[in-house]
Amino acid sequence: MSDSSSPLDAAPVGGKVRSPLRRVLYPIRGRLALAALLSAAGAMLALVPLAGVAHIAQLALSESGSSGAIGWAIAASVASLFTGMTLITAAELLAHQADNHITHHLRVAIGQRLMQVPLGWFSERASSEVKRAMQDDIGTLHSLTAHFFTTLGRAVGAVAVSVAYLFATDWCLALVVLLPFPAFFLFLHRAIKASAAHMGDVVTGMARIDNAVVEFINGMPLVKAFGDHGNAQDRYRAAVDAFADTFTGFTRPLVTAMARANALIAPVTVLGVVLLAGMLFVALGRIEPLQILPFALVTPGLCAPLQLLHYITHDLNNAVAAAQRVQALLDTPVLPAPAAGSLPNGSEIRVERVSHAYVPGTPVLNDVSFNLAPGTTTAIVGPSGAGKSTLARLLLRFFDPDAGRITLGGVDLRQVESRELYRRIGFVLQDVRLIHASVAENIALGQPAATREQIETAARLANIHARILQLPRGYDSVIGEDAQLSGGEQQRLSIARAVLLDPPVLILDEATAAADAESESAIQDALSRFAKGRTLLVIAHRLDTVMNADQILVIDQGALCEQGRHAGLLARQGLYARLWEQGRYQNTMDKALPAC
Image (cartoon, rainbow, N blue to C red):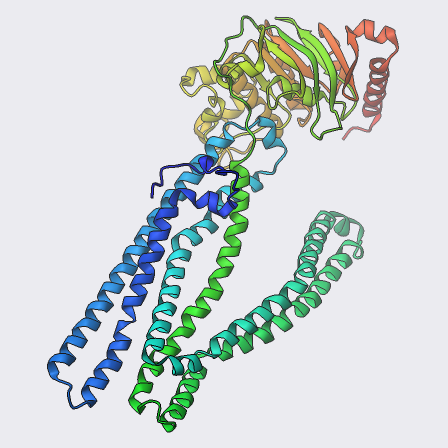
């Protein structure tokens, strides 16, 4: 009954594939089984006083009954009650300990897994998706592990001991008084079948509402500005009205069938069946009137456990879906770690016949090769969607190429440990990621041991020091609380982070794309100072910012179609020359616009 194994180790055994729920709960399966057994035993013992009451009544009304026998019956009932309560309490404690173990284990395992996945994996998914699995879905599993199995044990134990007691008392009468319960499951089956027939329509209706809500909210500025009260608003209302009709069709047969099922096993209904059947058996001379008492006490008590068994199946269904998402996160493919990390010799980067596709059969890069000589500046330009950012992310090993290889200092990136790689290659991307921490901690994210003086020096070089001093608590201001920074200011903060790492290679992926004119000038100035003496790769959308690069690579449809310096590429009258003319035309149009 060992629980020391990890969910990551719960792989299929002997070719048998476990369900996601079984895989997730594998480390605590022993504890949960024991908790369920303790709960079942506790529920059985807690019901002994009911049989005790019937037995005491028989002793009191019989001539042979003595006070001593009655006393022993009372003592046994009380002892069983407290023993049962103790077992149930122990089961609940064990289940909660198991829940705490697996919750901690899963969160740590997911965190460790996400530390090993390709960085590109995060850019392909919304943070809400990961948050749902790490928080909401694990919370759903908490309800299962902490409560479901003990509740199941209590319900099954109560039903099992009650049915056994009734059959031991009089099997013939037991068969009659238990008839409402099979009928309950029959109506319940019909209810589930009726609801399942409409479930597809309900899901479709919810999807229509979700789409209509997004369209309605996104279109609100148009409604306010142009008075467009139709279209999105009408589609939203139509989706809501259609879902209301669908939901009515879904609930009508379900509610009717459930009402009949619950009426069948209502305690008063069951008690009525017991009394009628008991009087019939008395009239036939099969039993004495006093023998009806055990059935009247025990049989109505079956109603609550059976209804509880029905309701907890909802928790099980929700937990199965949650376990699938959690297990999918735990099964996320990771970047292969080098068996023995190699240290690059220098900072030269070679891209050798690299190809990559996010979707098989649809290449984003195709047989691309070039070199980045130490201390030089290389610019990558091309139309939108040409594969420029993909190339930058391959250089950062956000993922590995499908074909070819990339080397740093003569060593394949796949043979360089991540820590060593990001000490040598810094990056400033268009999408800035800051954590909920102080400004100083954000700058020192890759260099936690940095002193305040080193942090401030990096901030000065990134042209963000003066802005930080204007914050309420300066460098101790917390991002998202008392540190509200614009897009350009956040970009300069990320540049300060790269400055502090002091890498020999720097990759810039449209670092000024989201900045205003003032911020762009500050960013360009910071980058020009920081880039001195480094190997620099710039992905640019404005060609006038890279015309002085040592080499310019022109990417189109995933292929390297031109390579050279600015003047030579213009003389070729190829794609670069056309892009340059388009850029000059756009700059002319911008200057022709009226000033504010």
